[in-house]
Amino acid sequence: MNSSLSALPLSTLPSANEPLTQRLPSALQLKQHLPLNASLDEQVASHRQAVRAILDGEDPRLLVIVGPCSIHDPQSALEYAGHLANLANDVSDQILLVMRAYIEKPRTTVGWKGLAYDPHLDGSDDMAGGLALSRELMREMLRMGLPIATELLQPMAASYFDDLLSWVAIGARTTESQIHREMASGLPMPVGFKNGTDGGVGIAGDAMRSAAHPHRHFGVDGQGHPAIIQTAGNRDTHLVLRGGHRGPNYDAHSVAQVRAGLEKQAIPVRMMVDCSHANSGKDPLRQPAVFADVLEQRLQGDRSLIGMMLESHLLEGCQPLSGTLQYGVSITDGCLGWEATEQMLRGAAERLRQPHAATAVVA
Image 1 (tube, rainbow, N blue to C red):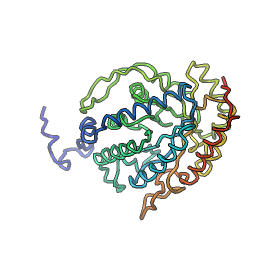
Image 2 (image 1 turned 45 degrees about the vertical axis):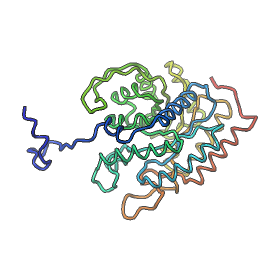
Image 3 (image 1 turned 180 degrees about the vertical axis):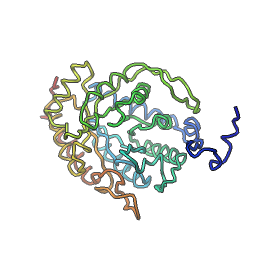
């Protein structure tokens, strides 16, 4: 078989119907180019264990995943991370703050797919540059002392970042995917499966059960070669309630129904509430109300609610990806501004410190 075709310029490929290909650096190459030192490696391991301890009920703190809907500007993301790192130290006795560093974005149809795909925001899709920039950015956040969270949308991209992450989301559109369940079963960190866009939690429960088991699946190794991947299974999973087409599902009645369903399937009852998306009616300024409701459920003794997720940036709202962009404003979903975020989280920590905070566990 003639292998010289791969060396031809893209424009000389013979068929317009064939996809054009361009080689990327392997995950191993990028990790060697932008490595973690021993100190950061130990820090990630410690962060992961802290999240696991919360899932297992060994750590009573609240887990909060917070940050921009998506990262498009490294400078504003690092400024946000600096604020979050300072706040994390102040509330660490009650809340474990994890930086939301989303560099891939699922699209219903088409649109900007995230920093890893199009770091220049111009449709040039410099994915090699996007992968490197995303990894470098996450590494800088780690140096600030922050645990890192992201959504893993493209399994091929997961191995470029898997050594940096302390928590991973599988999104509402991909929770039902066998490929993502297989991937999750081999990840070395806790994973949150979101309920489906229709609001149903059955597929997320199925995903948690699937990910807990070992799998053999097609994949690529660190050098980019096709490989059979053997996973051991990942029991550090939980459900993320994000609402659905029929409305929110963070209220106490909805949570009780979900709890009963998980117990019926003998699935660990561990739930996080996404305060954005359908739970906020896609209004970012409603996130504090959702957060307050879930916090009150925690204070009343429901420890099956292990945490919350917030979409927050330096400034509130969002803006279209066109013309001159305003610094610190999301270009995807609308976000809560930093001042409101800080006030909400400091207030939550203070409430959790109060001696009358409930300690009973809802079965």
